[in-house]
Image 1 (tube, rainbow, N blue to C red):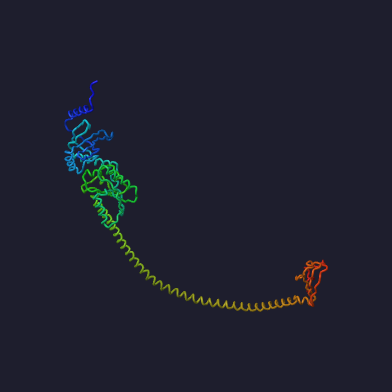
Image 2 (cartoon, one colour):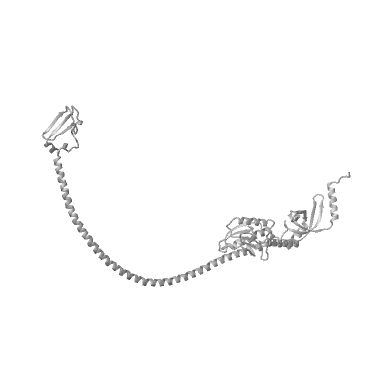
Length: 446
């Protein structure tokens, strides 16, 4: 076995081989996966290459030493208007490095900013073509804007100057708008996903009438999030009209193209909403004026008609009064004649009834007198004193009148009252009369 090499010696041989083989610099196209700037101003990157079918197919660490980073970053910012960011495709001039301790990496010597601009433009066109092929590019534009438009969901960065100008302009307009901010990051890799999430939240609440997406001016790189396919597709197919005010007048993103209404700036969106509200008020005022004019015309027409009817009514009223007065006089005469007839008939009936009543009263008095006389006679005849004078007597026992011999027993004390006196006796024998019939009139006293 040959003598084993140390890891350092092996790595050193690899470094020497790479330096001998790759002695020149190379221009490489890659995507920035990660980027950070250390406190010492060295810039460290993670470069990747992706395949539509296989995904990640290559990866390498890279760095820009601080003596080059400031120059490269400033030039990139001057050309593109933005900073190097993760997710961006770049064309870089690199040297291949291999360090015994840190391994393989790429030393970036220069970056071509125009490549990144071209790549963003290419992806923008691909996004537009894809949306058109899917048939969704014009969907949001076909929605009808609600009238009046007052309940708006706002998507913006909460601290953005454009959002502040937008709110101030609306508050000073004198019109009332119901607004709610859905704060999002408006640039960087997370911006598109944040805005899509905000749109999903807005779609779940049926109180909103439209969505406003606003952002102040920025570079092409800063506004690249608004060319994102997923974001543009969501805006194009959103169920509410979307109004945009992104960047400056010269800026036009894919989101602007698919939105219902594209305004130049955030303040232009506010001006549009104010003008729309003023137009609604003007329309209402115009309708109100037309309504007043029509109402006045109708009132005048009805007044003229009313005057005609009033004249006809006065004539008809006089005729009617005359007719009714004539009929009233006829009815009055007929009523008086009928009353005289009724009074005569009733007087005759009263007189006849009075005569009958007098005769009946005399007869009734005579009958009552006869009844009284008969009762007096009967009372006189049945007076106990008269009965006693006629030879009858009254027998009592213990203060009770004896009506039946069965009520007495031998030895009982009885008192017999006669017209000439009273006899007290003692019963020795009780003998009922077998021939006595209480119902026979012969046994009744006279």
